[in-house]
Length: 330
Ligand SMILES: Nc1ncnc2c1ncn2[C@@H]1O[C@H](COP(=O)(O)OP(=O)(O)OP(=O)(O)O)[C@@H](O)[C@H]1O
Ligand code: SF4
Ligand SMILES: [Mg+2]
Image 1 (tube, rainbow, N blue to C red):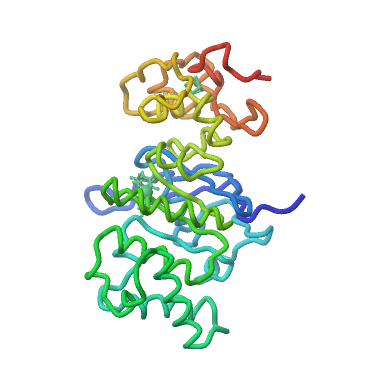
Image 2 (tube, protein in one colour):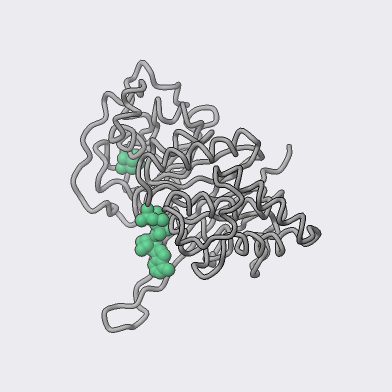
């Protein structure tokens, strides 16, 4: 079987956080045993609430966060942990905050040229200029945009320029971390349309957002994160129509646009109030909020197959789904 384009296996990332007196005392487990893959020409959406570890995952994949454990492979080959290795392997990242990508003192053209010079050294200056002009057309801006600085553009245009800059490197996988979160809804739609176009052209994406409706729009498969772990993965349409994990069900229920489109989470109960902490340190991290919690949830559920092509980390998968609609649970 062909190796996936990106394979992340058992990734752990921890941070040491100083206490109020500046001492390094507390350890934050941002990622715990995260495994996932992205195939060629596939869009994997990653969704989860704030602090669930989405950005840490993206940053670890491109080498900006150091994993304490685990492996990252591209085409089956381990990604080296050195500067530039991710770009060399064909990975590019688009951040929520385009200010961190675009140098305000540099023209857009110069910014694009820089990334192309590094990633595609066999292109000559005039060839790079042609590619840059084409990229500007592709994102709906004229070639004259190359002469201007980022401050001359709106937030949505700057985000499109960030995407064009990443595309200048001819990436095999584009990692987008909340690319639309800082934008107005109408501008979000333009960015999503651009990403859908890229997807139709065969580009692979790892698309991260806290907004399930947005993730649904662009993704073939979805991975749901909670407290640093993957709690569910599956084909986007199936996962939203019949969620297996109570947390996914709660996310679906909270997205009216998805419920209206025929999701079957009719039995989703209200989440219990709580801080999301686990009832037991070794148990399910969602237990503090889960309406279906039971005694064996004090034991950590494995991420196990619950239906063909679907994994969930729950002792009671499909609890929130009407029984008649639930896939057969082995
Ligand atoms: N550089 C860092 N130093 C210390 N803690 C960090 C650092 N980066 C992330 N964390 C912590 O790791 C956890 C996961 O954070 P992360 O930013 O990955 O979450 P997220 O899912 O991207 O959230 P959001 O939706 O708010 O962007 C959080 O508890 C966060 O406070
Ligand atoms: S394992 Fe238990 S607490 Fe965790 S999501 Fe499933 S039912 Fe809820
Ligand atoms: Mg984030």
